[in-house]
Length: 295
Image (tube, rainbow, N blue to C red; front, side, top):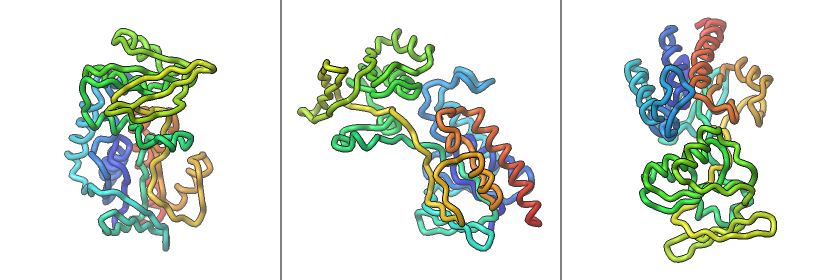
């Protein structure tokens, strides 16, 4: 049995794991993808001093190197279920392995999702993560969404000589800095349009965009939806149910030994610095929790 089982190997999970080890606890970390987290998909990190201007890929690698130097045991597998029984935790991993722990830190982040209203043509849509993993070049792509993620993805694809259109069903909400850079890159921006339909047309996709009584059709190679994220969590079986990470819920979780932080609980306020702070603060609270249990 370990003192702390960390689920998620991004900045928050890494920060918590390393600090908990420094405090003298046995730590095990599980990450289903690459150590370093989804910040690797960010084109540029501007708000994490002193690393302003660094690419997401570079910063992700710095976190991976930092974790590697800690020599904390790492399991490259997905955690599918966590059960609370007899005041301890039993985690079930995808490969059948079981992990017993006195406390758990959830740093599983968020995942892209496609709203159910688009389910009839969801198979023709890609998420930001999927399109960036494909390393696509010189293609015509429609990005649907008007926030920072949509524009960051668009700029990343523009760097790969793709031809971009960004469409949004309302006013653009992305930071001015991103909008100005998109204009410089020649990215077409369509405000107040919503996707009415997507169909395959040969090796292309025909997208119907509608704005009040006006409709336009676009032919493109790929359609990417960057319209929202939701918490990414394994199945968790506890003495109580919860749907959101409210302040009162987090307190209840902490009392039994579950701590959480980073993008998982931050909603739209996703930030590397906040994630790191959450992880370190959680390690301090885990220290108090475990000492209270007589560790």
